[in-house]
Image (spheres, rainbow, N blue to C red):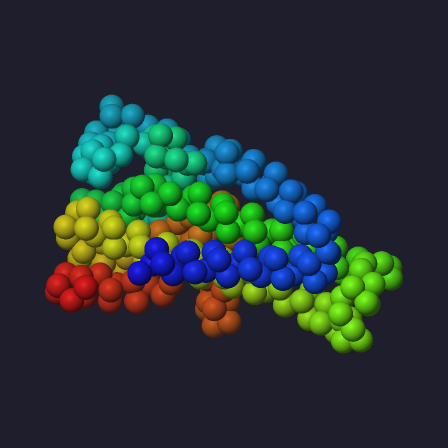
Length: 286
């Protein structure tokens, strides 16, 4: 179901791009925007692992450094048919973890010092299985595609703003009548917001899918459910000291907490809902 939902959302994002591109920038404007977006996001996709790991001062470890952690990741990767990813520890007290890398052959899994102190061995297995599921499901690629299209929509909206400010752009005749200015203005304002909402929906859908895949990998959904309960509380009490909101979607729980209106734009689904789904899996209801 989450795969289908992701496909629908990506299709919606692409359709929004086509509509905005031709309504505001015409064929040439849309083409320029997508080229710029592809260049930026391909570079980000290719080098994102190094950038993010450096941002959080992650330190690569081997079997001799953390034998139990290394063996756990190795066992889970083998069970899931994945090559052993590079393993990193982030010097942060905030309990969290993420996976990155452009494909399973270039994957990395990073955990904070805080998560190693907070979780039991079984709970940590649930978290690592979740992260390896992101690798197997190629979520980095999917989110890069969504980011490419979303960025292109934003660029087109910026082109439209400059065009209206300086009286340029397509003629009223080509735009389709007297209401074109109002229509274009609405698209310029609303299209980037709509693109962001779709991207957030894709991110949340992939989190649900990684929860499910990870629970199947360990065959113990309650391990991850218990971990999420602790991580939700721990992340709210001990915030991350490095990084920023642009990387929040990578972590298993949101590392920068917001409440009320800000929660509507979270990259993660509600933790309570994630736990409820995992508990339903444990009861055999899904």
